Length: 190
Image (tube, rainbow, N blue to C red; front, side, top):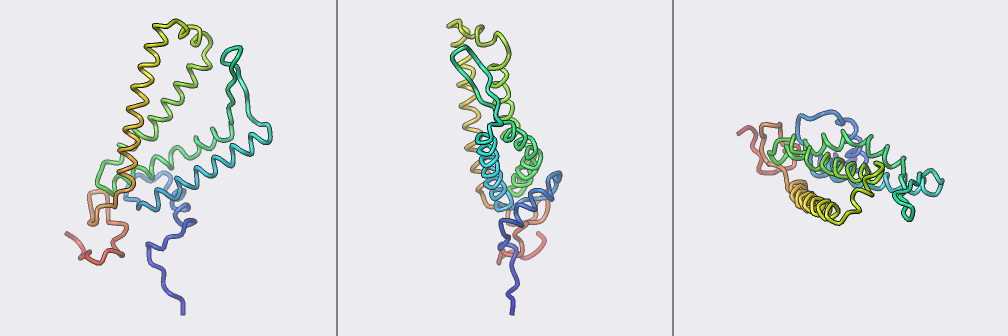
């Protein structure tokens, strides 16, 4: 006789399918497993793509200055763009599970993209490196970068804590508890 699986027995494959099936869904709540498994798998996929593109020689080198080179892996960049919206929406639903407005997910998702894009722009826009070669300008740029970096690090820690917290055990304004079938003390509507 086959034992009936409970919802908490969601497999990695099922959790990853939910990530893509709910890619454009902001409403509702997401369990920790629905958030963390896609994060892990997307990181692994990104590294595999990076390895394939590097081994295959499909990276682009560009000179920042005469003595420095940077490498761009377009495969990983495309993958990051592909998972941008689904990552945002699963983060929003995860926040809603702990009763925080999902739009706060804009900060960790797009904050890093904006910071990364700014750094790349500084490196590839002609004349910026020479402009920053003057000590006072470099000091101002490094101070600003340090402050932004510290803010992003603190924000990352806060959102990490949010994403490991157990969800609200009762229905909230974002929907039913996704673990309601598992919670022994759940008595229905409040």
